[in-house]
Amino acid sequence: MNTILFVGEHPKTFDVRWHSHQHWELVYCTSGEGAFRFENGTVLHYSEGDVVAIPPQEIHSNSSTEGFSNIHITMEEPSFPYHSTFRIQDEDGGIRMAFSQAKTYYMSDVKQREMILTAIGDLIVAYIVVQRSNSEFSAPVERIRTTIIRNFSRSDFALDEFIRQMPFHYDYLRKLFKKETGLSPLEYLTRLRMRSAEKLLTAMWTNEYSVSEIARMCGYDDALYFSRVFKKYYGCAPSNFNKQSGTISKTDPGRRELEENQP
Image 1 (cartoon, one colour):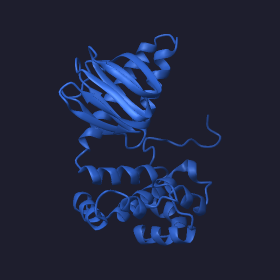
Image 2 (cartoon, rainbow, N blue to C red):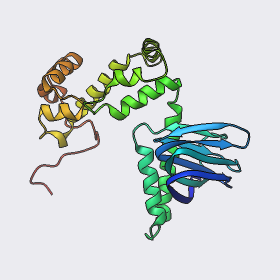
Image 3 (cartoon, rainbow, N blue to C red):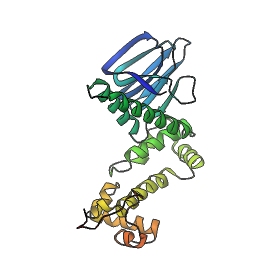
Image 4 (cartoon, one colour):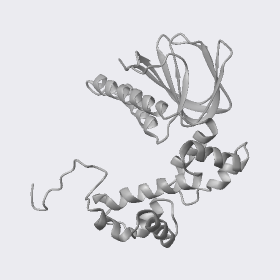
């Protein structure tokens, strides 16, 4: 189950001829964009950050006008409950990291590397199942949501400009986004930034950061504006939040701090 049989990598490539595999093929697009074409006439477009899973014996080709690069894995008996080709987006970069680790260990001569590859195979399948189960949004809403998740920590992220560039009416997209997520795009972005600020303010390892530094980590160049938004969201200033929250670290609830002079 979830056995990684082969890991390969395409540098910048424009065309992969028709072929099939005896086992499942999982393809992570690391740059560019393109389209898979299947024998039954189906065309599946993809871009950077997408994972395409292709079942055994499915004859397909892969082409791009501008070029693509990818990491592709052949896996025996993946334990996900799917039987046909599908595509998912890697929301937080976790799948890409797992694919990169699979490539590294597949090419290494580390003793008992199969143990690590088995664990990575389990991790990739778990990521895929979780990400696909969250794919409950329409295509335009999922694109906006994923873009926000990938860029919320950037102060230069122009959310309105991104939405206006999409091939739909601006007001329609805002209403559709709120209908499906319960929040407007700006509210969704603010919630992500505030949750990130909460984690940073309550994590022991970030105690040395100033409010201005944490503001920049959460996508705010203006620390005063960040503080106003934070106070509106949590009811207190960021500088007082750690004391009022009464917690050492929300990033690792099982962590136990030792006394400074204790081994």
